[in-house]
Each structure stands twice: as structure tokens, then as C-alpha cells.
Image 1: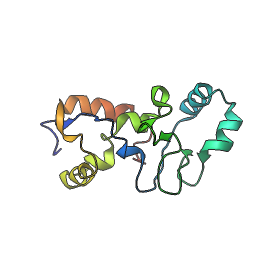
Image 2 (image 1 turned 180 degrees about the horizontal axis):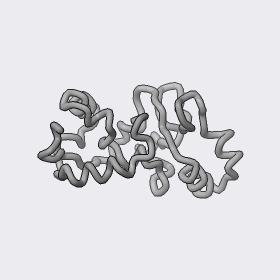
Image 3 (image 1 turned 90 degrees about the vertical axis):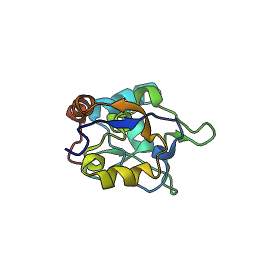
Image 4 (image 1 turned 135 degrees about the vertical axis):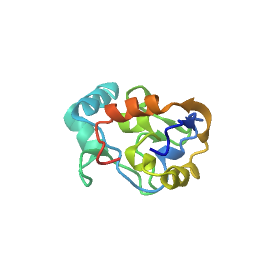
Amino acid sequence: MWWEGGLRFTCLSCGRCCRGAPGAIYFTEAEGAEIAAFLSLSDVEFGRRYVTSRWEAPSIRERRNGECLMYDASTARCAIYPVRPAQCRLFPFWPSLLESREEWDAAARSCPGMNSGELHTAIDISSLLRINPFPDLL
């Protein structure tokens, strides 16, 4: 694997991963229930307001400009940060971004925290890949 020496990444809380090009924001059934509880909504109401099924698995809807509905532009923060889905917690250590140095560097062009900051070892990264609930989709 090309990242056997580890990869540098430190989240700078810029919110760029929460906005931009449209895409899926997958969550598991348990994560959906946790988000609904955090928002003080029933599972049904959470689904009605925030969920789309246009992707391979349930996903949080986005605004027309590609921002996640949970992204608060006034603070550049996630409104559900303590219970955000694993997909969000694992970024940028997604299988699709780890396929090649070129994929990683392409993502790094829009994420200023990639290729700088804390060194994540190959062991750390492999551990993160094992907890990814959507390895075939990310």
C-alpha cells in the first residue's frame, strides 16, 4: 500500500468536507436513531426532514449548493457534531481516497488539513478502515 509510511492529517474545522460537490452522507440505522434523538425528533420525523434514499444507502440530504443539511454556515460547524455519522468521523480515511496517492492528493486540494499536521500510522489507518460501516461506498 502506498501509505505504509502513514499519512498526515489534522482537521482544521474549516467545514469544506461538509459543503461543495453533491454526494452521499451515509449513516447506519443506529446512527440515524442517535441523530434523531440528538435533534429531539422521532425517527419518522428525522427521516421526513433530513433523509434521502437516492443513494445506495440512506443519506442525509443536502442543500442545492451541495452543503449537508447539518452544516451551519454561520459557524462553519456541524450541527450534529457529537453524533455525526462514521463517514464524517472517518474522513479523509476513506477507501476511495486511499486507493492511490493521486486520489489522496486530489482530495487534499480542497482539504487544507490533509498532508499536514498529525501523522497517522498505517496501523492507525487500517484500524479506521475496519470500523467503516460503508467500505464499498466511500
